[in-house]
Each structure stands twice: as C-alpha cells, then as structure tokens.
Length: 216
Image (cartoon, rainbow, N blue to C red; front, top):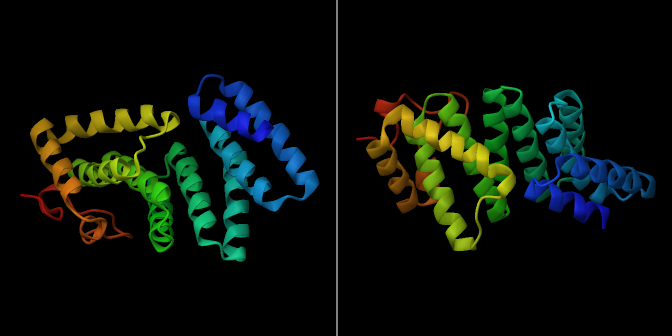
C-alpha cells in the first residue's frame, strides 16, 4: 500500500514530499523483507524523485545499482525500465550524451520485449535530448512516432513527465519554426518505428538539421 501511494503522489505531482517519504519507508520495508522485485522498483522510483529534488548523487547511485542487478538477472524488460530511469537522472544532471545512450539502450530492450510503454517514454526522452542538442526536426519525428504509439495504446504522457515534454516541444518549435516542426512531426506519425530509427547514429547522435534523415 505504501508503494502504491508513493507512486500515486509521484505521478500526480500533488505532494512530492509525501511521495518521497512514502517511497523511503516502502523501500526500507522491502529491503528488510529481501523482496528483490519491489526493492528494485522502489529504488528506481525513489531515484527519480530524488533527481527532481536535486539529490542527484544518491539518485544516480540507486539507478546504477539497479541497472547492474537487472543486467545480472538477464531480465530485459526490467533492465529497460532501469535504463530509462537512469537516463532521466542523467538528463537532469545535464549529461545529455550519456542520457541519450541510455534512452537508446532502453528503447532497444523495449523493442526486443514488445514493451510498448517503455518504447514510448524512451522515444519521448530521446526527443528531449535531441532538442537540447539542437536537433528539433529529429525530435519532432521521434515525438510523432511516440504519439502514434500512445494513441494505439490508449494512453497519454504521464503527468510527471508532461511539463518537461511541453517545454521541450516549445523549444523545438522555436528552433526550427512551426511549419517545419509540424511537418517533421507528421512524418514521424506516418512512419514505422524502424523507419524513424533507421537514420539514427547512436554514438554521434543525429546529423545537422539540413541533412537529417527525411529532411526536405
């Protein structure tokens, strides 16, 4: 129950302090019970809460611990989750290159396990990184693909991520102009995930705007 309440407060963002207190208490209980599954989940949830509150050192340690454990266990779906949370923490630290790489790995594992929610949030996270790196058209394509996927799932961007997403979208509009941004977004909606990702260079990140895949 404590874990569920912590998640509810976190997602709704109605009481971040309460959410963190519940997560800390819940994590301590699961650690004592040696419940690895819930221990892992609460560690990652708490890590993102801590990152939002500026406690990035502890947040990163929690994520690194859980990523290592999940890799060892060989659970691709849960490893994808851990990588996503890790990317969020790194992005909050301003480490965009490493955050982008973790989003990419999370996306690969999400695709390997058909984990649609992780695919969606990883695409959205990559879009935020792309805008921060000055690649608004690429970001728009990623977001267009994620939007189409969410429509198929019948879900929307979680409230806890929505404000950051909206800010990134507004920045993308400002960088490339409304018409070009909308055109790229539509391109993303109309392509398969494989087509959208085909031109993505993981180590170097996207090419400049005028030579991005599919740019006109």
